Length: 155
Ligand SMILES: CC(C)(COP(=O)(O)OP(=O)(O)OC[C@H]1O[C@@H](n2cnc3c(N)ncnc32)[C@H](O)[C@@H]1OP(=O)(O)O)[C@@H](O)C(=O)NCCC(=O)NCCS
Image (cartoon, rainbow, N blue to C red; front, side):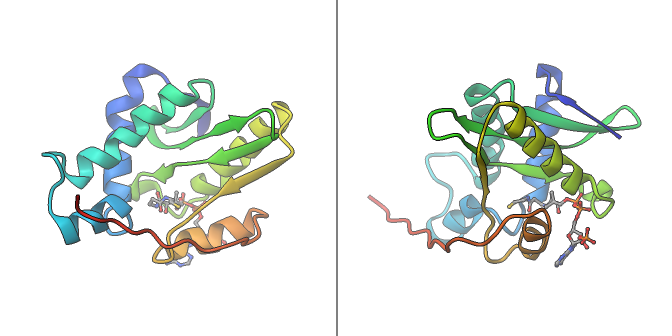
C-alpha cells in the first residue's frame, strides 16, 4: 500500500468511496430521512461534494491510499496555522479494503503531516452511531473531549 497526495483523476473514485462508506452514518442521510431530498440534491450528492470541498480547502493535505494501483481510501485535512490545530474532516476506506489497517495508516500519515507543518494538536470527530471511529480514534491517541447534537429545521 502506498499513501500519496491526491490528484484530480482520483476525484470520482474518492466520491464513490465516500458515498458508499458513509451509507447509514452520514448526517446528510439523516436529514434526508426527516426532510426528504433538499433542493434537488440527495444525500449522496451532498456527501460526495465534501470531497470537492476538502481538495479546494487544503489541496496539499488530501492523501490517498493506493493498493495494487487502485485507489482504496483517503484522508482529508485542514490546518489552522495561527492556532496550530490540525483537523481531519473526512476519512474513508473502500468497503472491500476495510479492516486491514489502512484507516489507521491514513490517520498516522495525516498526524505526521500535521507535525511537519508545525501543528501542536489534532482533532477528529465521529458520529455516535459509528462504532469504528469510536474504537479507532482513541487507539490512535485521540481523547474524547465532547459530544455534539445536530439539529435541522425547514425554513
Ligand atoms: C473508518 C474507516 C476509515 C476505517 O478504515 P479501516 O481501513 O477499516 O481501518 P483499520 O483497519 O485501520 O481499523 C479499523 C479498526 O476498527 C475496528 N472495528 C471494525 N469494525 C468495528 C466495529 N463494528 N466496532 C468497533 N471496532 C471495529 C477494527 O478491529 C480495527 O481496530 P484494530 O486495529 O484495533 O483491530 C472505515 O471503516 C470507513 O471508511 N468507514 C466508513 C466511513 C467512516 O466511518 N469514516 C470515518 C467517519 S468518522
